[in-house]
Length: 303
Ligand code: GRG
Image (spheres, rainbow, N blue to C red):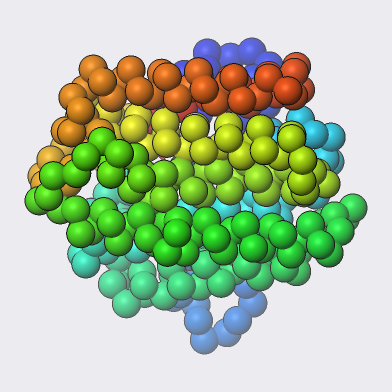
């Protein structure tokens, strides 16, 4: 996430989260299972060495702000990134967005094959729940762990990511209202981002109460803002910075926030959501300063 942070303590903290999750994912993907070499190589290819790691960073920054040691946050941070990559690999398939480039390199089905890419997504999803259920999380109660599994399952099912993707597929060539776009975005992309914040809080032992509600609100608002900014970047972003081609939404006749409400309104809404997200953090005071900075990154990012 170096694009918008010119240095300083926040940039260093984010860089530390990125380096940490890379190691955790590398270890997590060292799966000894003879006979599945091609699948395991494709999983490593898809997950390692690229990506902003926004969702794990949200887990780490949220958990740390509530006093959780980093080691306790590794499992939920890995779980959300594994789910995220599964969604990217499946989304890139010919049956969905049919993309050739992801994170600056050939998509999984181009580098391997379509069948392997389907299995990569399936196996990454299973691995995410395996990690949440079984990886070390010293200091976290069994109840909190179960709550994390529930929250992740809810975020990626029909009410969340998969449902949002279904709405996205059905919306091709259609006109949606702004409320319809926001509902699709909140499910497709926002739900996993909100979930990342919640997992950080749950790992820190904040399993109910006003602080959890504040963080849930923060996660929901930055999650929608993230997808609106993604729509904006698809119109006016730099493919070299994004690591993928732009104009895909228009080429696929997908309704987006800018195509529905206009580019200026999209930018205004993203800025408004950032403000609402930061306001939601007020009860946490200074502890949430890094999360507020992350909200700034989300609406100002160029990649
Ligand atoms: C296949 C069930 C299923 C769901 C797919 C989230 C999603 C639904 C697809 C991803 C496709 C996509 C491009 C969505 C737009 C927002 C988004 C998730 C962008 C990519 O996330 P970044 O920018 O990517 O965090 P990096 O590479 O930095 O991790």
